[in-house]
Length: 277
Figure 1 (cartoon, one colour):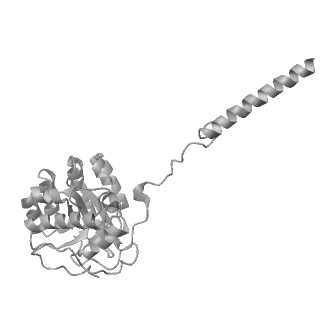
Figure 2 (cartoon, rainbow, N blue to C red):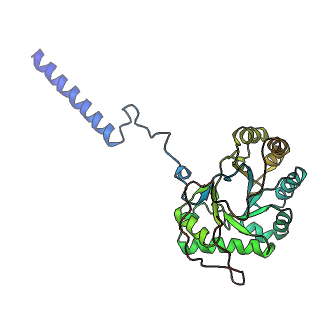
């Protein structure tokens, strides 16, 4: 009798364990170790940069670039700092801001800085849209910039968030623009303290680096404050220059895409030659 009771108890215990393990498996095995998703899952921007996109200058020069302007508060302060240290930079302009503040576009161009198309409204998902939509966005943005500064070349396109796709690069190339990425990112769009911006840029900038900064899109006081320290430091160690209006053939992630027939030039604008090389 005792043996029969023990056998029944063992059978019940085995059944309970089987049910628990089966349930754990069906709901994702939370009872087992290492069942949670990995923290190392790559983000959307961790994908490889397509061919034809600049990540370095391809020379000994260092290029400072500013995103999301022009902004009526911060762009004049950035221009003032650059002027003080005789530094030329590259400004990646949003079309809606260029349309709203054409006088600032003219001021940027008048100071000898290079202009870059940064999409109309900072569309992070632009690369996933149709070719027609991408072309329309880039053309609209370039038209707004040209309306303010007709003589200023627009030879670069920077995709917001660095969310590149091969189609984005191809459309930009068709419109005479080279894709522009970066090598140093202090994430100043998150508005970290000026000291953190300084530390990141100062320690990570090397020969040929393209540095990502912002003069629009939020409160950029910390970026402006950081420039007062960064500019003399960088000038003492590197040659700082605006990206050339004839984009370099070197400094790319890989060889550029094959040139395609140029389409979609703004009405009344002279056709731009293909990407410089």
